[in-house]
Length: 175
Length: 102
Image 1 (cartoon, rainbow over the protein chains, first blue to last red):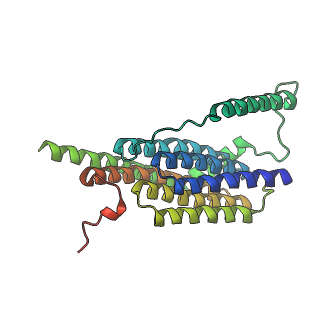
Image 2: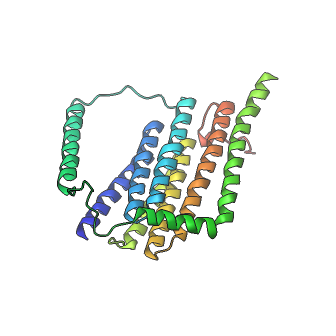
Image 3: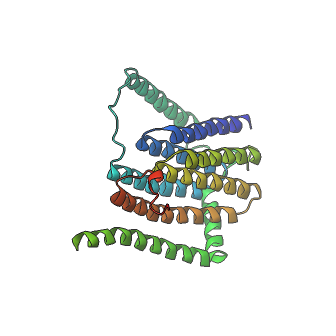
């Protein structure tokens, strides 16, 4: 109970801090990277809430596709040139130190919590991933089949729209 | 299933949504405004998943799935528009997009 609450509070702190960092950062690249961290934190919240499929969608679609698109456009526009990088002198030793601690922690957990058969111990309140996925698939393809198909058409329209927006400009330049 | 009260998730979602609204209001860079909108979408998604988990229903999660798909479509078109605006105006400052002003 208390552990869950502590985990929630730490993650909430990270989420709010990264959101404010996105808001206040003067450089658009930093804003985008803060937002990636925020999306990842929200994905962990989804895992805590027992929605692993949504969590994975969040990471692949939001943190993966959408933010890469954002970074791509930021670089394309070139409006925010990165300022002279100031290398903090203590940054690299600290990073190595923390990485070593993380690796030791992970190894310790794997060694101590693994069963003799090699399986990781399941937590007491477990979320059965396959059940969640199967249930979602059944609901999605029975109850929500029409919205699902409409979504595919929407994505197609968006793709055509994005391509058309950029093609027209080329034609105008040629003529 | 939830050991953290659902209220906490709703409060967090409200805080994130407010930060997104603030971003839309105070920033003038169109890309940052767009990112703030994404943050607001995420905050509402978090609230939906929290409620759906509280009432133990899958419908909320499926709704969030649709929201994510629509957000992807929105970002593709929106960024294409921003690139177009940048090509014609050489700027993405929303204060300078005032061609229709009388």
